[in-house]
Image 1 (cartoon, rainbow, N blue to C red):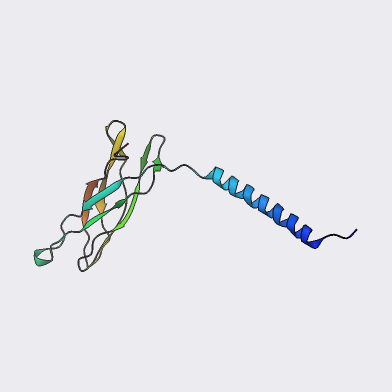
Image 2 (tube, rainbow, N blue to C red):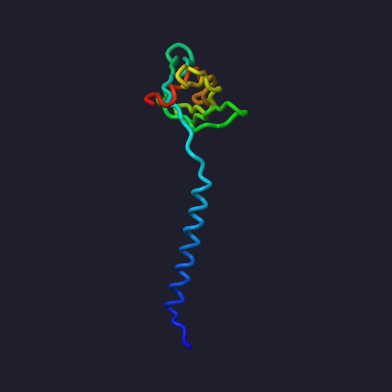
Length: 134
């Protein structure tokens, strides 16, 4: 009995397609649900002296939750400041959640920017509330 090579290839493609679909299904099952993020708008503290004295502004959205212990979390922030004749990067983790009522919270952030133009800036701010309209 002679085998049809096209039929054989068709069955191979179907088997590979089924295996691929199963693989995708397993990968989707492993995907963790998204958590939450916070928006932020902030300014650095002043740096340098005299005519060079200045600060920078920056804004963005934090990373999703980074668990800390059993009942807490922080968020990571990676953002550039605005550009005068230079800019800085802010690469930092927030503090733990600070409840503000109705099951909502913010995070306090304190640290400094990267060094650029031979100086750095201190910064201190709070993220905006999580899920403000929900």
